[in-house]
Image (cartoon, helix red, strand yellow):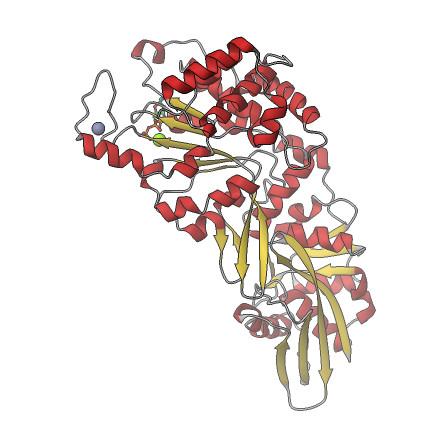
Length: 506
Ligand SMILES: Nc1ncnc2c1ncn2[C@@H]1O[C@H](COP(=O)(O)OP(=O)(O)OP(=O)(O)O)[C@@H](O)[C@H]1O
Ligand SMILES: [Mg+2]
Ligand SMILES: [Zn+2]
């Protein structure tokens, strides 16, 4: 007897249909799994056998062959346990195998027959819907993540026993159905706010520019000046996430097994701050069956690299592709996968190893060579992708003690939303560009025309500061965003004058 069960796996960020075929034949009792299973799938045999027996069903004393089709893609994880067990029971005529045809099924089994959560449920559910299936059976702990997808029935099961009962028509299970709007609304709350930052008005202004135009930021300043505090608050003033953006980001978290039951839809912009000891695989992703790295976990949000000079050079090198393209390619022997990784980059560094070079109150103990070596650790190409270079000084004691709260994130975000709207219209025809920070040379020529006084100011600045062509372009991009914030079509002298302040020194 043969039973077929729809299931799924993930390939990159997308769900992949997998058909689990179970054949029971007469012969010496055996249990073989074919179709490029990896170690974790092969182990499933033991779990499936124990779960079936411990739920009180008979384990068929037959020759069991399980095939996972398509057979040419390597499959990992424990998510096939439940479809395999149900396939065996249906093939053994415990219930009608045709009942399996309407549902995709995914879940890990524990030895006592309980169904445990698995990663990747969101993309697998999206794929099941695209395949036109009526519904999907998922582990109870993954139910909200699956239910984010509308237009497919999500049945949550806690045990093999319950899954059998449902498919045999003996147990009734209501589909899970939260409202998309509720998810988007309930989850879009940050636990930090710009109003907690005292003083630092010029830095806050620069952060508003960064959020408005999607520009990368570099922060330099002594320990305790608030660099980390400021960076953490950047996501709170970025424009709100659309449902599609939230879905894209949640897919990545789903694959990484990081979606929690209280936030099934990630509707706040992620903030990722990997430690400087991270490996390049940790940063861009990797592994036998590739998993997303920090740059993808930061997709649609902020990637913060604190203490930038401490990162290994080759680790920073791998940031180039995501910064240029908004995605990363991970090549494997038989395939290459693309993970989205579009983020605003914020980097922070002290001015020197001791941290106090240039500080008015404290003395720097570093030698000129040490300071020079520290500064040169970070590669030029990375800094070239950063438009806003900010010096963050310590806040004077008096300002720190002021009762008055700063402007709230919500108020800043309101203005950011307006500025983004202008850019959305400007780049409506351009599929690759959504904000000023992404402009290339041809867009800069088109959208950053200068009047004669602005041109003269920029010429003088370039000469005086010895700026490169790239430095010149950076200033124009920032000036474009400042003009947009000012709701002006043309760049004016004041916009350019402010933009020059955020240039990179040297
Ligand atoms: N402008 C500010 N308003 C309110 N609190 C501040 C401000 N700046 C710093 N602080 C306080 O000082 C603490 C340290 O700041 P933070 O960790 O952001 O500094 P840092 O510049 O990242 O330092 P380091 O170089 O050591 O990483 C914050 O947690 C916060 O409590
Ligand atoms: Mg810090
Ligand atoms: Zn120093």
